[in-house]
Image (tube, rainbow, N blue to C red):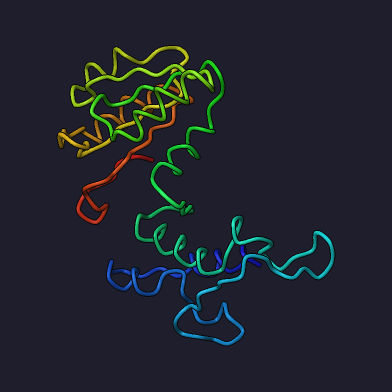
Length: 201
């Protein structure tokens, strides 16, 4: 049911950002009540028709109709197929990092948010076994030369926190995508995607 709701909501396209922000993921037809404003679901668990047979949601930590609406709307605003909402930016960092395995290399912008730096240097490197390099990625020549055979993720943050350094997103994307199997992550603390063209694909 959740997949059906998401696909129905994503299937509608609106030409303007404001219209998209108001309507994406909020089609009243997805609710039996046809409520125009999506209801806030407070339930932590959902009744199943039988063990393992559910209607899209089991526990709120894995799926929630209210969160589904939000994720669909944000994905639509950013022109993405899917969106995932997390409780915090650090939770998102941990989630994305779990795509890697021991021995993989992350090339990270040197002026990165302190929470990200702490997670990479104090947890991801010593406890998970990831290799981390912090490099001034505002210089694209340094990005190119710092990529290794085991590089699996390039982490840019622009504008950076706290020094507001800028990374050329399009340029970084072009370099990274010349190397098969490297994920490019763009952390965006200060600048909304509405004002910042995201060239990551």
